[in-house]
Image: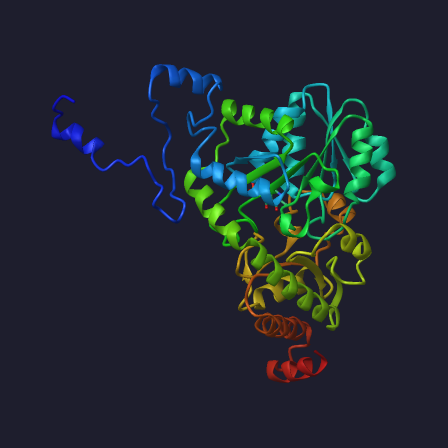
Length: 412
Ligand code: PLP
């Protein structure tokens, strides 16, 4: 080796290629990879030799995350993306083309519908929207030009559920792929590929991260479907950062424990809320009163941590209730360790037309909760005092707050 100057030395000093003694997976913050020879570089680029090439499409930390998700979803492979919406975009890019159509459930995450209608429709892909549980409408809408059938089950925030096996049958009869957004339940509570779905998509910054630290997406499926998705990633580059992949791959280690705890708390809280005055309805598939409870028990191993309910009678009641919460935070996210509340009509579903909101059951007094890991007794205390304040806000001014609270607590 020839002598190199200190400016050059500082670039080379302390590099280590072998991470094998590190018990915790290292974060591979690298954009490029060193090849042993020009021949090896050529072989890696052509795919003749396996190995990393460039972090737009492969990276060791991202790879570990992908492997773990694939394992949980019982999939042959997975591809990670920068966000859930990037994952959706990649699925569209990989499988739909001008002149084809996508049939999508009406009851999906609001931005999914906006993405389909405002962006993908511009490229000549027709978007057909169908009620989640209207099987006759699915059958009618899916035809030979359908490339993708897209659903979120259970739906957010109403917890409606579609029979995945039945819908897969309808899609496959016309050679279309069924894509299931499994963000709400995670593979711990539902494994759509085992029920006949072709691809499973996640907004991985929700329960997979579980701590609200990053935005990420991932898609799982059989290798013949994963390969074109990696092609889209390689060329269009919606890449997940190694740092976020590392956060996620560590979080997955406790996903099962978190989901079990969250599921238990959510069921307890939903059951409790159902008995409260001024709560008109609770939408949680874990409740026997939910119209999809039986199907949920058949196709899910749990019910998740997101549910909604009607607080009082109008938007004013819902907002007073939300503003009164002290422990539960106002945030339009789901899947954090900390419980969160949101008002869907004015936030997550605010870009839908009033008619669409009505069709999806998003009323002005609907409140959505994402249950975290706080003890359920503390959460019940917070909900109790917020319901009391909601009632107090409705009482005539002559009625003082302490009196109102005392009365309301008797009714609670
Ligand atoms: N799918 C569901 C069910 C979601 O809740 C979200 C976001 O909230 C998305 C997809 C989009 O994911 P991201 O925000 O990671 O782009």
